[in-house]
Length: 82
Picture (cartoon, rainbow, N blue to C red):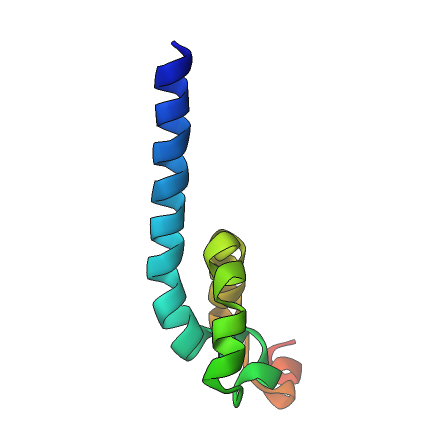
């Protein structure tokens, strides 16, 4: 039983990392600038530095990216929405 459990844990971790890697590609090219506007003009050196964090935290970043898509982009649009 412990061997099967260990194999399952390793497979789950590998799947999580694979999904994180697949998520990182579009997030580092488009999403990082939408989640944090200060990172919009960041270079590839910055994006490579945050790659491991994006792979590890992809569910949180996905939620934030989706929230930014549904929120108005400007302060004027935010005040009109109220």
